[in-house]
Image 1 (cartoon, one colour):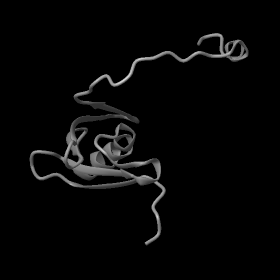
Image 2 (tube, rainbow, N blue to C red; image 1 turned 180 degrees about the vertical axis):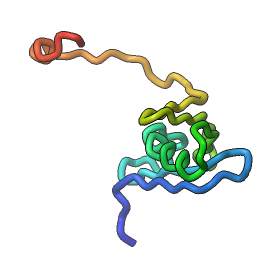
Image 3 (cartoon, one colour; image 1 turned 120 degrees about the vertical axis):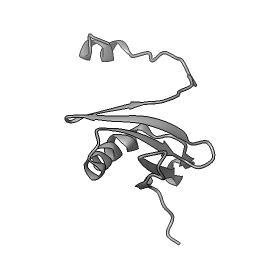
Length: 105
């Protein structure tokens, strides 16, 4: 087999409880399976909205530790909601030269 070094997203219609389901694998980033991936759903929501002719959907991602996502499409924007846990809080320190280039931040 050829090693997989990219992200792979698999999706399918839901089983009735969910409008669609998905799984995301990132073996090249040392993440065998991502339990919930907002970035993947930013692409899946427009796809399934078109297929299902719906702008609000309930999705499920993952197998063991997966999660439920509330999805909405409004024009060219996607909105994703669901349960979350704070994992890390921190600060990013910029060198003085970086601040001069970006006085806002």
